[in-house]
Image (cartoon, rainbow, N blue to C red; front, side, top):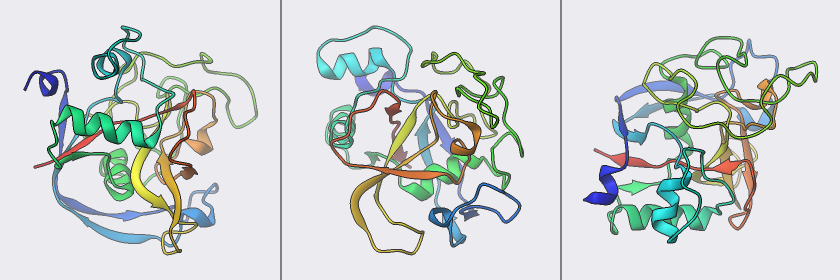
Length: 217
């Protein structure tokens, strides 16, 4: 299918991991606990977030750039997935577990690149002392090195929608809001960690929130 030919899919192998914040991470909070051991089946994930020229094909117009698309609601993202796969249910937003497993790339450190992250590793605006260190806006996808699985921009640039309803902890009751992951260009490192999670209403359209899709194999 021509639409799918525009997408670079990365194979994410089956495995298991500990989902949630590690004890040696000083920024872990209750929303990232309790830690849960997860067994994951193999799947494919988009190498980068959906970009503006890909979105323009779906929307019938828009910017022709390699910047990640933003201003997209959760429902918009689901509509894109249905359009991309021509109704194929195997193409969807990632679950929260799929997203974190893919982001970690086999690591258990706060970031897939180790215990620290620098402006050479990802697009974020402030360091932990509040000093401005980033470009102050979105950057073209793929500018920063990929993680061990070959995925770009899992930390920073834009936050990303997931399929899951928000829970205040990994074992708490569900809420109508959806989970977002990854951190963004206007945040600081503590909000880019692999285990970091936040929430947004399904109709939220923000200048730092985009998405990528997965495909079951």
